[in-house]
Each structure stands twice: as structure tokens, then as C-alpha cells.
Length: 516
Image (cartoon, rainbow, N blue to C red; front, side, top):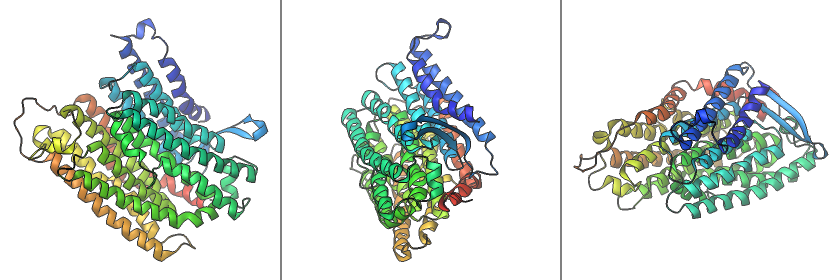
């Protein structure tokens, strides 16, 4: 188990180096480009397999216990250690990351975005995977920061070199926002480590803030929270996200929404809740207020983009929807209750599955029509995907109703539990305030349903217009890349206990100060 976890974290880095080397003569296939794309599928597939074996070997009877741990001294002078481990909180995110990266590599094998060398593309995707997996597996604050920052450079180049219109400006906005947030976050992490005498996240969680004064905790939560909020993204620090999604290639958008946004909310749960509970208690009402503002703002922005004549971009609309969905995650965390935090973690996974599928589908629509502009797609009577490409239209409608939180699908449980957490917040938090936040968030669910149903009506319905160019339905490689996401969306919706059985004991222990 220790070896497997280390392989999962380091394996993509080794694969990235190998991708830049010349292919062996017997493995070149029809061309070097094909060889390196096959290499990407092979490496990400091997990492996914290793992650599934890790999940199968995980002790599901004790999900609150750190498992597959490695603890090696790295920088003795600073007491920085190579400390790895997984529990019920990090394991689902590890599997989600490995799955989405493999599906993106598989999709890119058949539909590589236009840009420079495929070698560089594959290497960047693998470096991105390694940094994301490391973020969810490391148990040292300094290593967490390094892994958190490691994903910025590959995502910058994926947007800047393989993106669409406005890619340079979007890539610069992405990296400037996240780097500035990360500088403030580093100061907060150093403050915790120096004041407590350790950077070990397990020891800090067990201490539960007892070794830190209230003023230190408040300062640390403010500093670290800003960095995490940018990556989440929390309103009003979200403005880099729509530009990045609109300009990014399809696989870049899938990884950005499905994986990178989860790093911010994971940091809130793994670091701030257990390490600085007094500081979180102080800022929880403000976090909840920003969360519900994001829910309403994201929905209103989507409604504005969806209306006829707005020239709204479908990718931009889905990006704004992420601001709203991540607002529910932050609301659950702000409640500081097991119910709310479990809902936040469930919503994280659900958002990764559903929004990843949505970006795949919108990318496919853009490839077929040559645009993601909603007015151009809908025209006077609607794009009529149901009649022109029924499987594609059906999948888009399925992903939309999953995203709006239809009961029986994954999107429902996370939002409902987050609302329940706000209904009865942790002791000491103002219940009238959180009831107000819950009511506003519940209104946000109605707005979410409204804009998603408008999108489905305009894109999927309408008269079947005569056009000289036929629209292809779902291809076999698209079916292979999208089916796992659709199937897991249904499975998580019908059987939420699979995921909640993993997260709940770990959350209970985390909120109890390391005591099971």
C-alpha cells in the first residue's frame, strides 16, 4: 500500500519525463505523435489501475485512520518530512483525479486540441496529474504548498498554447490570481508551522488548535483561506475562472473544473477545520455569506448568458455554474458540522463527475458546430440536438438535470446535506444567520434549474433545420470517455452510502480533534 501510494504520486512525473524522450523503434506506431499520445493513455491508465487497487486494499472498516503512510525526513532543519497517507476524505478525490485524467488522455488520443508538440501536451497533463494527486496525498504543510503550486505551470501552458480565442490573457489572469493567493497562503502555513513547532498535518489535526492562540488561528485562517478561496473559486475571487474555461481546450476545462477546483475546498477541510477551529469559527459566518452570494451570483450570470440575444458562450455559462456549485461546498464547510462537511465532500465529487461530463459535451457541440455561442447554436428555432444527434442531445440533457440536483443523481445529495448543515450549524454559530443563508441557497437551486432548463430547451429542442452539413452523433471514443462519468453520476445518486460511508468517520474524527 505504501509503495502503491508513492507510485500513484510519482508515477505521472516519471511518465512525463519519458514522454519527452524519443519513442523506442518498436513503439512508434504510425507516427511519433501517435506514440506519445498512446504513452499518455498507458501511463494515466496505469495510475488509475494503481489507484483502484489502492482503493480495493483500503481498510473500509476504519476509513478515519490514515493508511498507506510513508514518513521520511526530507529537510531536518525545518522538520519538513515526505509524509504521505490517505483516509476516507482523500481517497475519493484521488480516484476522481486518476479517472478524469485517464479519460482526458483517452479523449485526446482521438481528438488532440490544436497546438504545438503533442509530446509537450502529454507531459504537461502528466505533471498536472502528479501535482493534483500529491495535493490529496501529502500530510505536510510545506509539501502541500509545493504540490498545490505544482499544477499552476502545466495548466497555464495548456490554456496559453492549446486554448482558443483570448487564451493568452486568460492564462495570465489564471496564474496571476492563483499565484497572488498562494503567496498569502504560504505566509499562513508558515505561521502555523512556526507557532506550533511542526508542519505535520496529522499532529496539527490531533492538537486541534490547542497549541495556537486565537489570534494566531484567526490570522492563519484569513491568510490560508484567501489562497484556498481563489482556487475554489469563491465569489468575489472567481473572475479568473470564466475566462480560463472559455479559452481552455476541452480536456483543460474538464481537469480545471473536475480536479483543480477541489484542491481549494480540500484545503479548507484538511487544514483549516481541524488545525485552526477557533479561527474557522470566527470566519464561518463570513465564509457562508460569500458562499451564498456566489450561489446566487453564479446563477444570475448563467441566466443572463442563457437569454436570447446575449451572445452567451456555453463554456462560459458552465464555468459560472461552477461558481454556484462550489458555493454549496463552501456553505457546507462553513456550517462546521459533520452533516455539512460530508455534504461538501459529496458535492465535490458530484461536481467533478457532472461538470467534467458537461465540459466534454459542450466541447463536442463546439467541435461539430464550430462555435459554443448559444445564440448561434439555437438560431431562430433551436439547435434541435434531439432530432439531429439524439444520443448527444440526450447526454447533454442528462448532465444538465444532474447538475441542477435532480433527486436520484449525484448532484442532489451534496447540495441537500450542505443545506441541512446550514439548517443546524455548529454550536456557537448564529442559527438565524445560517437559516437565512440556507434560504438564499435554496432559492439558488431554483435559479440553477431555470438556466439549465433554458439551455436544454435552446440547444436540444427545436425544429430540425435543413443544413448542408450533417451533425455527427456520439462517436465510439466519446462514448468510451463519457460513459464512466454518466454511470458514476447515477451510482452516486442511487447509492450515496458508498461515498458517505468513507467520508463520515473521517470527518467525525477531524472535527473531534483527532479522536475517533
